[in-house]
Length: 171
Image 1 (cartoon, rainbow, N blue to C red):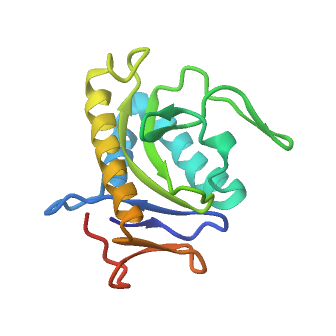
Image 2 (cartoon, helix red, strand yellow):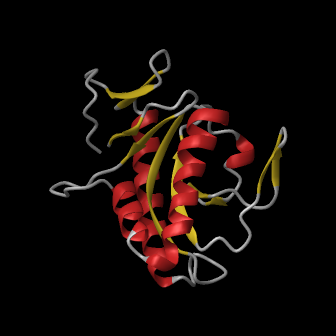
C-alpha cells in the first residue's frame, strides 16, 4: 500500500500497488479512462469528486460512501445526496471506482481500481466484476491487518503505518 494523495484538508487516500507494477491500482484506473474519449469526462468528474469533495471539503462521510458493495464502497455515491447547498447526483454514471473507508474514520480511505458499469450488477459487468472481486480481496486483507495490528492508524498525522512504524506497508 502507498499514499495516493495526502494533500486534502479532510482526507488522505492510499492505493495498492502490486509487486513489480509500475503504477498503483488507482493510477491505472484514472490513466486508462482518461485516455478513452468516451470516458474522459466521467474520469475527470470522479477525480474531482474524490480530491475536492472528499479530500478537501467533506471527508469520507457516510453520505458520500453510500454505495455498499460487500467489503468495498463504489464511488461515486448513489442517489441524490445534499450537503448544505451542494447536491451530489450521478445518474447513470458510467464508471465505478472501489474504495475502503478505514473503519470509524472519515479521514482515511484506500482506493482500488474499477471500471465501466455496463450492467445492473457487478456480477453481470464482466470486466468490472474482476476489479470488484480484487478490491474485495484487498479490503479483506487490509481489514485483517488492521485487526491484527500489522497496520496501525496514526490518527494524529492521518496516516497508516506498518507495525514496525514504517510507512512502507506490504500486504
